[in-house]
Length: 285
Image (cartoon, rainbow, N blue to C red; front, side, top):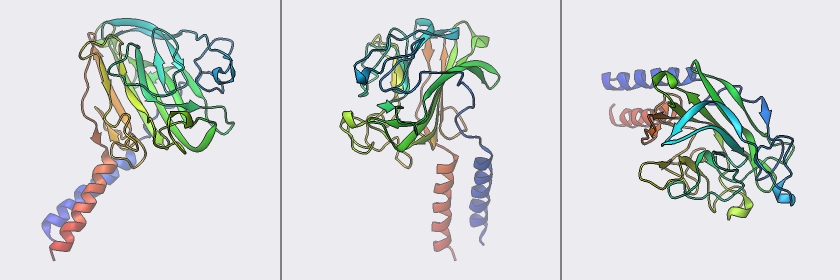
């Protein structure tokens, strides 16, 4: 083996070793409360009549446990919505994802799409308080959830964490999106078929003001196939401000939130290194 080949091989081996030591992106816990099985619902104390069956979800504001400054909008309660998002001003039952960079909704959405948990084989939305990296946090889980209408042939597992960072200043916090599996992108009523195509999922946030710099969407939002496992912007194999594939971290400091372009995670880089190594091996003999 030639020196360059040895170097590339050693680098790939170290990268593989590091990747194997990574924990899954989703943090255990944050599951003390559930909104039960529903479609298009919002957590409501005492239960929520399923809107798809003619009922309504009044929505109960859920305490976060600390104060957050979100682009100048201050809040300490929010609404937990089944369709992959939380909102601050009012519940949201909308199932077809709309653009987050031109909305008047105050929303944080790790995966805004038509989640349907009515099938007994689907997971349900849960939330609660816990710790993340030693800091107090509020989290919402959508683990092994299906899509409309009651499909579970494909499921998604993702999580939202809001992390108290008042150690850096009043109202400061981190937004963390975690993804372990993304198998579907669309519900039947959003132009999709079999969980694919149509008006596909969006991920990001907005304070609803419409002002420049107060909203953000991840690359791949509304692009068919982009977020899915193996897609060009696969949420499970890219990362942002993190060394864990599937984890995206946004720091909210003094009312502003830093964003950036997601990068391929370690597993994706390992695959690239392997391709390069094999290519060089064929050429250098």
